[in-house]
Image 1 (cartoon, rainbow, N blue to C red):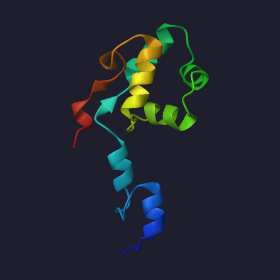
Image 2: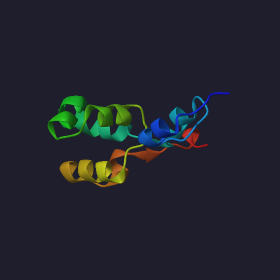
Image 3: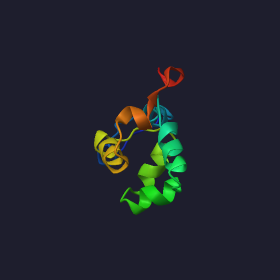
Length: 97
């Protein structure tokens, strides 16, 4: 059994989770393939465009890996692309728990 450092756990927002739990939790049943398709169709390098518009590289990585991003991020992308959330992401039941 692994001991947990409470301070470190609190700082990183997870509390004594078993190995692999965080990665599983961070992957949502939502995929962002539509976002990258839109950017490609508009002639943008997705990583470059997202970084140029103020998105942190960690956020870009999360989007590429279909991991959890907050609704503010989705809202900001939709505002920049003048679209709705359903235009850039979709529910993928095969990823649902």
